[in-house]
Amino acid sequence: MNQPTLTTLARTVLRIVTGFLFAAHGWQKFNEFTIAGTQAAFAQMGVPAANLVAPVVAALELVGGVALILGVLTRVFGVLLAVDMLGALFLVHAPAGIFAAAGGYELVLILAAAALAVALVGAGKVSVDKALFGRSGSRLSALA
View 1 (tube, rainbow, N blue to C red):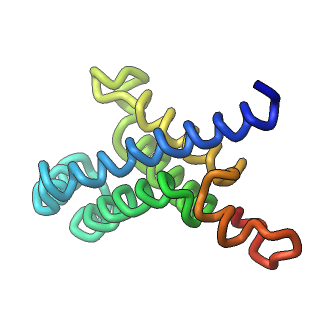
View 2: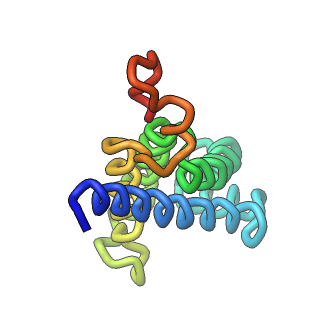
């Protein structure tokens, strides 16, 4: 395979897998934990304004994850999801150390890094962003 093909494949795999994981976590907050359960858990963890933050985070993770999978507004959602995970890291997981089994930050750190990487490199050729904004000379080409 040539380098551009590998780069396209790498971007696409990173974007889809990262999006899938975020969408799964958002779906879980709505359907398995429920929003009321997520609000209670966030409050117990010391998240400020847990009643407001829980549904916003759940929606961001679900919608943002699907957006990453499709490659829609990828840079915007990548940054928002990275900030979401940095909030989880500093507000909840940092005191527990690195390992997720002990409540640590390894998962949220890798999700933050993946979301930020997707935001930095963009959606790539196989995406809605490329189809909508990828024309040369487009004022919105930075979104592609």
